[in-house]
Amino acid sequence: MENKEKIQTKMPITWCPGCTNTAVLTALKKTIAKLIDEGARQEDFAMVTGIGCHGKIFDYTNISGIYGLHGRVIPTAFGIKLGNPKLKVLGFSGDGDAYAEGMEHFIHAFRYNADMTYIVHDNQTFSLTTGQATPTSNQGFKSKAEPLGNFSKAINPIALALAAGGTFIARCNSLDVNTTAEIFEQAIKHKGFAYIELMQNCIIFNNELPKLSKLMYNIETNKDKSKAEKLVKEWDYSTKQGKIPIGIIYQTQEPTLEEKCPQFKTNFPASD
Image 1 (tube, rainbow, N blue to C red):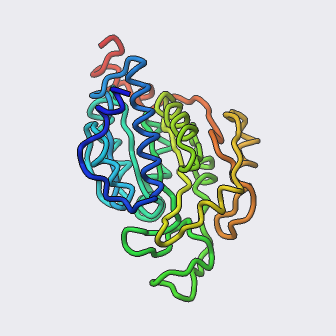
Image 2 (image 1 turned 180 degrees about the vertical axis):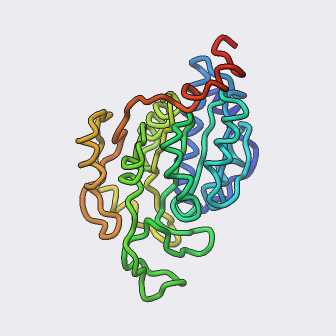
């Protein structure tokens, strides 16, 4: 409890009452406190956030970090990791932030496989700018910007991550704090680029998570790629049909960027 209190800042929380970001913050504090209990130091953590409602998590978490530009969370976090590979770097994005402006970084991050964690708050809407459709909004999604409905099909970011060579791919229900905290912990401990998609709602512009939660089911950690290829296709973002697997959809071990590059071994020997 003491460590959880140290991680919380004194900034007043300004998310909408009932916003699921509050549950995400609770899960994050629980995770970091547990890791500190196990021997990590508070100064071992650093975070980067994008622009959007999710970004306020930086204000409420007492670890080092920076607000990034919209769509540029990954390269900023990547730069922090290059500067000090011993940090546990956490990146937080929204779905528009990650999958629209940030898509090029998203794809290549799996190739590099730097040892850091990337968490995407996916409520299928640009909520901070009054609810426009994002790349994961379902076909037909109506907003002030598209009153006739979104004509485009949604992308499947989980499938993209697997196709791009992801070594840790997970999905969480943001309403389930304990399971989310457990997956956060496993992601941070994973050696490589760990990607988590947080299924959320926006209580103002897209309040459908309670309904989607009925389609969710928990899975055990999966290390079989052929099974992962089936799991990533179960949920159709465009039609909102199918089941939604929650948990670590795929985990494997590949050489990290730090292990592949001799410069890291020279400048940051393991014995330090």
